[in-house]
Image 1 (tube, rainbow, N blue to C red):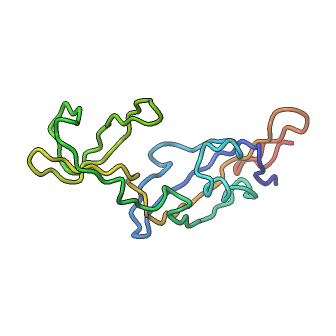
Image 2 (image 1 turned 180 degrees about the vertical axis):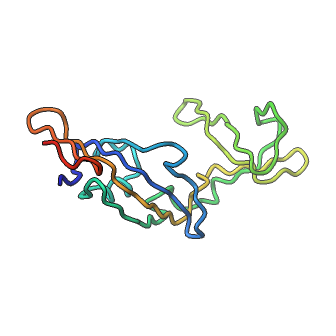
Image 3 (image 1 turned 180 degrees about the horizontal axis):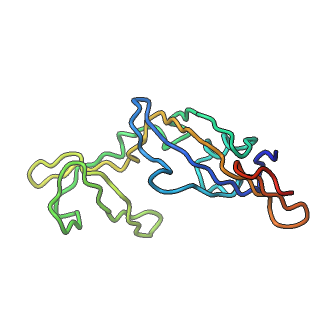
Length: 163
């Protein structure tokens, strides 16, 4: 059976969880994930784990923070005046809001989580919610498809290979 290589289209089902066992993402909710190995559309550590796997094979991997969503950076926590936030609704801790930030002369909208409200001051955290967390992924490859052209090959867990 064909193993997943760079350039192959793969379809996987997966579950992402924290070291505590809390599930933060699952293909049970989103459906199977299809991507081309080498296109950098998924986390590099996730892609590297799928390399060499066959349809029907499963694997569990641990991803260190530096290879996932990065280490937590306290410099990304800021306290701003409530008037600086374009929030239509009432603000509360745990809410994710879009804030306008200027970088390289351009304005970008960036997500930030409200962590504290103290009168007219709002503390926001620009770290990714999973920054600083070790991630565990359980991955099952459903299919591996070679690029179109001579030697087309589709391998799936259900039907084997059609090469």
